[in-house]
Image 1 (cartoon, rainbow, N blue to C red):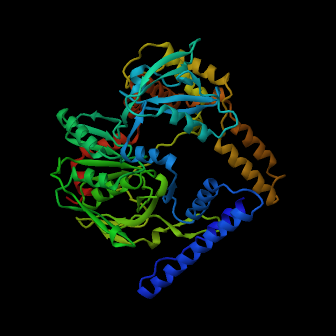
Image 2 (image 1 turned 90 degrees about the vertical axis):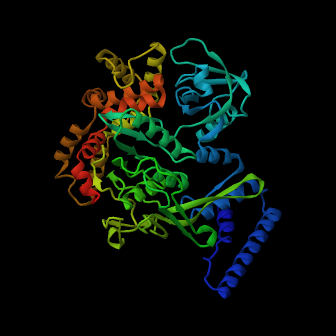
Image 3 (image 1 turned 45 degrees about the vertical axis):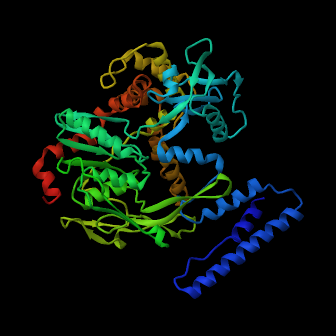
Length: 557
């Protein structure tokens, strides 16, 4: 059936809109002609093809195939998934207020995280609780079903109208019998600011994880609380923040710059896509020294925020270069509740630059979009005359080396065995020390090591993979025999032993264990409170904020 999808998709190919009226009429004719061909092709196939076609499957496949040739942000969202779009946009949904995941060891879904104050947490659910039944109906195991489809089905069963209730039966790790809870659904708001606090003397810290509706108000509230606690300097952490609503980025910048300042311009094909955004409110604080932390996963509205603050010389940007997403998407409603979220314009920050890094109109033979090389970017200037560039994300004023972790840590984060140890610890201990002071004992870490060794946990080392690739290269170049002894000796050194690695990387693994156990007692705030003291970039941001001369010199004050 794939060849049919390709055939139908090709009939939908359209040319770019031409600038003059004659060309526009020609373009409209091409659109009408191809849509007529598509309509006719499908009717012929539906009538004469040897098998019965499923329009609900085939047409969405055609649409998805067509969109693959555009940018990755233009998406067709079926009616069944529009609730997820609403939740991502507004940070709100109706349900129990918990993330779920597929647990391989039980072949069922389990609670990943109940949000603080939401129905799941209020009822007493714990991370790791395995979902057995809803209103006495067994939800069943995944079996041969797709993981995503199975998880989505369970998620849909948990959601519902506010005020409705149901009985949830779970199997708690460490408990012999299932537990039953009555859950009352409610409207749930997921906080975009999971953590804020004082980090050193008069330095406040705010972590913003997404740009959902109202997130700038949450930052404002955190800022006011910190100032009451004595904050005279501020770190805004946008690392790993993939963005969201552009207007929230403008409102966030407005907290630190005067009313009436141009922050953002959007330029698209049609006038309706050409917009500009100025700050509209009285700022909260235009003087507080501000450092914004970013990395390669800071994108979209995160880049509008840090880029505008950089262009206006209002903050020092620290970290690694940001992702480079200078495109704007808008949702368009389709018949029967479907939605098309499509890219309608580029955005430009105060200096006039667009920081889009990838050119989706130019692709390599394997379909990858070309990245704009630094040599082809253009120089713009901040309000104080500092040179900045377009075309490749936001380059920090102060580059920082990103924290690196061994491959083992990433495998542990995805491991059911790691999670189950943390679940059992939570269920066997009624309380722990405050999150920023909680540390497992040596005996408890030894118990973790034993539990991991007895599980089916496995992991790969990138150095070992690289060695196997080197062997292939040596063989192709005729060095396999002469270099065999040296390569064999190197392989013996790179062959990992789980017990040795758990000892060698104990401090880093302990950080992960402590934070994940704190998460189970103190929710997301406890998780970040546990990790923050080990963040190597925070002390550098604090050092800069306390060095007034250096800070002002960077911003040319």
